[in-house]
Image (cartoon, rainbow, N blue to C red; front, side):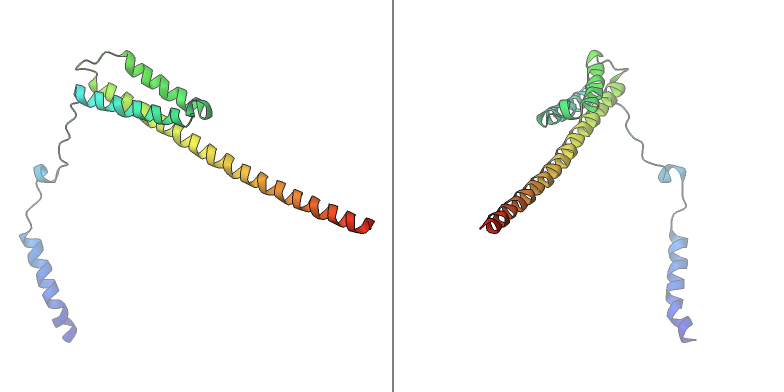
Length: 148
């Protein structure tokens, strides 16, 4: 009986909260309308971001280290540059600049990963060289001691 009395307030709360909730309507439960109109300012901002991404990729020499990704990004960027902005193609231009930005970012990331991998390999090689030099020194010392 005590268990029922403990849960009774929660049951009442649930019943009344569900009953007082407004009934779902298609207008209120639908996703908010997204403004799909893209203006010239949006395209110019997308172009600026793509140019910044390209410059960032160039700063780490992605045009050399991640040549394929960089060239793909450059092709998409050049394709967008060739189009003249009109009201009909603003969304497509915005999408192309965004795609170019993402491809430049991928080239940048690939270059950074390659650089880190090369640095790790270089550090391993330096450690091996140090070990070999140390072994050579100890071998020379042993040879010098055995000759005496």
